Every structure is written in C-alpha cells, then in structure tokens.
Image 1 (spheres, rainbow, N blue to C red):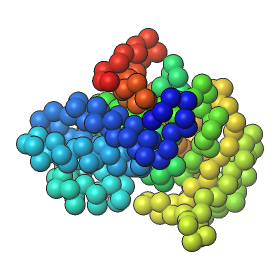
Image 2: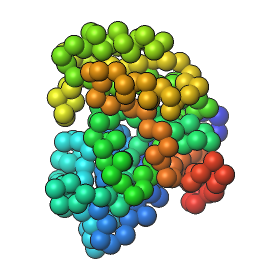
Image 3: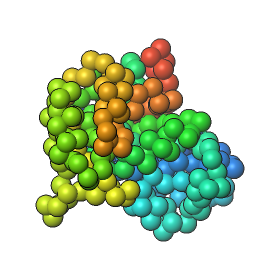
Length: 245
C-alpha cells in the first residue's frame, strides 16, 4: 500500500488477514472458540483451520450458517451450547470500533443476534479490524442494525424512529426483505454520532418487537487493528501496544 493512497480492496483484505492471524495466536489447546461472521471473520476461520491442521485442538461455535459451513469445509470440529455453556474465546469483526471505549457496532453481516449471544457467553471477546473501522463516535459512518420480528415491523420501526433516528428495512440483493438465520428482519438505524451508546442500547432493547441491537457496549476485551505499519492491540482505554510489524 503506497503512502497517502486510498486502500484498495486487496489492501483491506491484507490488513484483515493480518489482524485475524494475530488474534488467532491467542487460541490454545482445548479451547471452545466462538467464530464470528463477516468479511474479516472469514480470514479468522481460515487462520483457525490452518492452526487446526498443524495440530492445535479446539472446537468452534459459529455465529452463522455461513461461518459454520466455512469451518466445516475447512475441517474445524464444531460444537454447540448443548455441550458447552461457556466459550473460552470468541474472535469476530466489527463495523465500527470507538476509540478509547472499544464499544462496537456490529451486524452489517446480518448475524448480530447470534454474535451477541456468543459474545455474552464468552470469557473473552477479541475483535479484529482494519484501521478504517476506528471512529471517534459510534454511528459516524455506520448505521446501527437492529434485529426485529416480522410481525408488527412497521410499529417497531416507528418506535425506533421516535428515538431520533431513521430506520430502514434491510433488503436482500433480490429486493426482498433480508431474513436472518433466526428468521427475523433487520432495520438499519441511523442516529448520527451516538453520544451515549449504552443508554441508546438500553432504550432500543425496551422496544417491543426488537430482538437485539448491533450495539456491543463494554463487551470487547481486546481489539486487533491492522494498518500499513503493522498490527496493534487495544486492550483498554489505557493500553495500546504494537504486537506485529
């Protein structure tokens, strides 16, 4: 990537892969590993498959059918909450990471409900991103996805808009309403810069018809950020150290 030039898709993929490979180094023998969904998490599954082929023994819980299919095809053994109530480590991507707080917006990949279930059951949630996902305030670049039930969707949409934002029904490439793996729809909600994301998450959660929001507040234990200089690890508002160049 040349200095000053905007990153190409290939550049961004290389950064995502670097962040994924750094995060996967945290996986140890015997772990139950949560596997995220999306373009960045795809590279984490690839890296996990490579480590499994090299002899590392772990089992995975995927956050979507798509991730599960990728993991199975790569030979990663899968498990479920029926056998494991708690996950040791989850590796996932994010659509926005707020500097300083490590609060997140997730869900542009359509798996926010399952991602939040897996995150909440994890001892540690590790996020992997390229530098473009870092923001000073959540909502500056990305809407907050909200998963909702289909029945009464219009009433739920009106309630979300009463919070001060716009709520747009997500459509599939064919023009039909997008349907999640759990059979729900998604409203992409634009609130602009979110000054109090914890409060907004709480208010969204109180709306009848809402299943879950893509606001992940206080859940990330570490964020691996890849840029042209290497990979950096953010562990807390007071920690920022380079781990790979």
